[in-house]
Image (tube, rainbow, N blue to C red; front, top):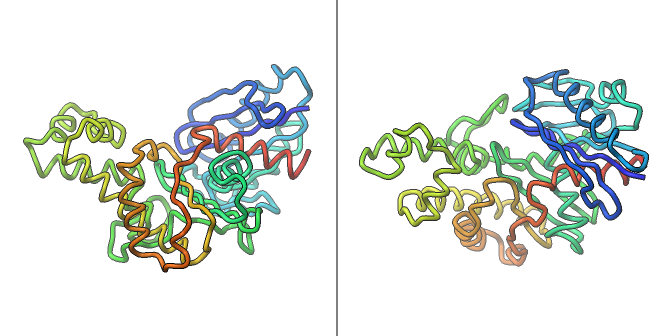
Length: 312
């Protein structure tokens, strides 16, 4: 018996057939299409392709979406990146495939994977942030996901850390969310702003070549470029401001940082840890701030775990 986990991101869909102990048997990736039911169709397509190659029968499917979701009904609340607002995602998915489907927020599922198998394993209470194009989040309280009264909670990326900061992305009406201060999108913005203001810099040279983004900026920072290092460290400090608030509110056993931008490692986590320790209340600053262990597999493995625990 196997389960399939699907992680829908703003730019790609990643899906995996999972075997015993949630080991990945086979995986597939494809670009995320433009919004709405086209995303549902693409998910059904990748699931069918994995199921056809499975040695054992598939029993359930889990899907993580970059959106707020009522987990009880499977209806999307708000989606900044996929245009699925109000979509009856679970119902539409079950119309397209012969297995029961569980749907949840992608940050929740990454948290579930880290709690069951990764950096938060063995802890009752954990905070997870996934830093990529935007910032997702997940909360484990008493060993279980905390979703809120309508399944819309744990949108940790939209906690405000700078009230007069930049406007947030997508349909978020706020300014200065942590997502606007240390996501991959905000890092690219700050790197380019510095490049335009400092024509003789190495960052300006990358911008002139048309290849400056958070990844190439990180490469430059790793090579020791002081300007790039300073921009990543500033983003880390804003991350630390948010972490201090989360620990003061939830008093977790551990804070886990994942997502593509977490590849910056201590360039980001070092300043975040320092700022968090400086700002958090003494009783709550004991929680270690650590890197995630599940890497890019967290979302699809977490989706598979959700399917197995809820439906199989």
